[in-house]
Length: 268
Ligand SMILES: [Mg+2]
Image (cartoon, rainbow, N blue to C red; front, side, top):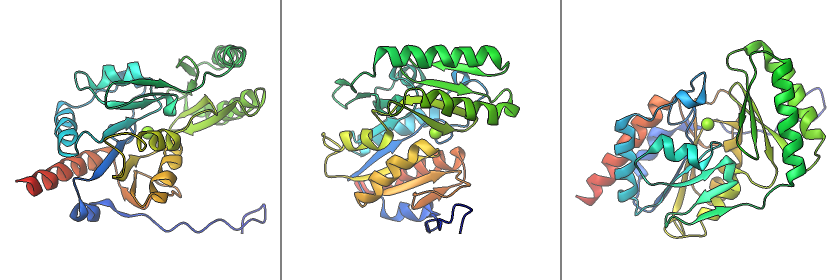
C-alpha cells in the first residue's frame, strides 16, 4: 500500500527478450525508439551517431519484414533523417506529432494553439536563463528541458516543467525522460503513432513489436500489448508495461542482428 492508500498495480516482471527470437516471424512489424534504446544517450542529443552496422541491419530488416519497420521517437523527423541518412525510413517524430508513412507521405497532427506554443517556448527559455546548465531543445511545438550537464537540477526542472504545463491545462503535458523533462502537446503520443501506422500498409494485420526505454514508450507498450504483440523495454529499472526486456542499447542492437539472421535463415 502506498502513502496515498492506493495499492500499486501488480505488473509482472518482463521476460528476457532473447527468448522471443525463437518465434521471430516475417509477419512482425517492428517499431523502434532511438535514444536509450538503439543507441546510448550522449550529453548533447546532437552528438548521437548511428553505427554503420546498425544502419545495415535496419536496411536488411526493412526488406525481411516487407517494409514494416518504423522509428518512433521524440526527435523531429528532420533530426531522424539526419541521424539515419541515407536510409529512408518510416518515422514518427515528436512522439507522433509528425509522421511519415512507408510510401513517404508526411502526416501532421492537429497543430496546438500558437499562443500556447509561444507561451511554453517563452517559459522554457526563461527557465534556462535562471538555471545555468539547463539546455532547451526547441522542437517547434515541444520543448525538451535537458539537465544532463547539471544533474542537480533534476528537482527544480521537474517542478518548473509541471508548473509551466499547468498554465496551459489539458493542452500541454510533461513527458519525463532520462535527464530531461519535455513539455509536449497532449494531442499526440507514441501509442497513437503506432495505432496510425497499424492502419496502413505494410503494417496492417502484422504482429507489432516495439522496442523502447522511456516513460514515453509506455503508451506504445500498452497499444502493442493490446494487439497481442511483443513489447520490449531496454535497460528498464522501473515498473513497465513491457512484457520483455533487454539490458542495454548494445543488447538491443545484438537482438536486432539476431532477429535479422533468424528471418533470413527462414527465407533461405
Ligand atoms: Mg528513448
